[in-house]
Length: 384
Ligand SMILES: [Fe+2]
Ligand SMILES: [Fe+2]
Image 1 (cartoon, rainbow, N blue to C red):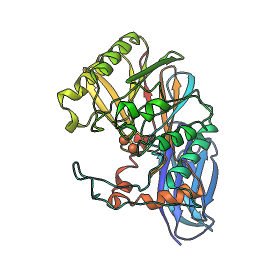
Image 2: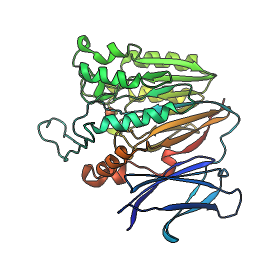
Image 3: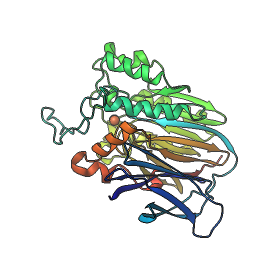
Image 4: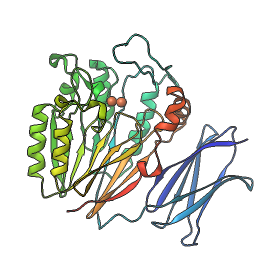
């Protein structure tokens, strides 16, 4: 018996979550300790399917290096280490979450088509029905169950609620999101595009999801943008979106602002003038306190930093619950900044699916989407 794919998914100031799998059913134990001693660490190990494991280490000290071991009957199978996050600046104010790319109704996962060649995908597709349920159903349902256990002020759904924009898929997506017990807001992804404004089932179901949605919550601004080219699905801001965005950012000049959109707007190949990405970035650069720009679309974890005029703005991409590496994100907002942590939904069916679909894109999913610990979990100071 061997273990493999030991992955440290979540690290906060007080907790860490490690996943792994075994080649055969086994009763594997986990232990964890700080190099310098300190508080005793509480460890809870759960397993599903006999061979998919999750260990939660809690009661950790912030900003501290820890070593952990996975062992079977006293034999060490794996040793690893992580460092907890430093404490978030200031006092806790509230907590919200984001989830993206739930892709309701997706039939086959992992297909890539070259532009203009929509007949034959260049990658083999994957699927895994379990007990008659498709992968998008059991993965998202587990994510929603876990989100419902959290104390959240609201949830932001960052687009691609369906794979094919049909009336039935949109209805199913709305039903599923309706099982969230927290208030939620949705923005449009490239897969949520309508063939014509007359048949915009997405907008009919989520009428608030226009070019721009904004609200203030406990002294912070939240702006949700539609950055999708209606014909191509590429990144594009309409003139109206830019106009509204500029106005809202000016109105929220004295408070920190969190910005959300589906497509990550830093991709150089999309920087054609009529996509207005430069105008979007100018507005971002001129605001004194942007907490970050949070996107989906790539289904991977990544943080990029844009440096301008002595300021650094975070551009964050996050994983989806419905494919490897699996995740939704929690934000603890403090008076002086915030913490992002990534949570991988854990259940028997999802674990089997993640194992299968990490092999997507000829194996590139496993290496390209998980990101570093600091892409998934980080602390950020935000000036007020
Ligand atoms: Fe997507
Ligand atoms: Fe997308």
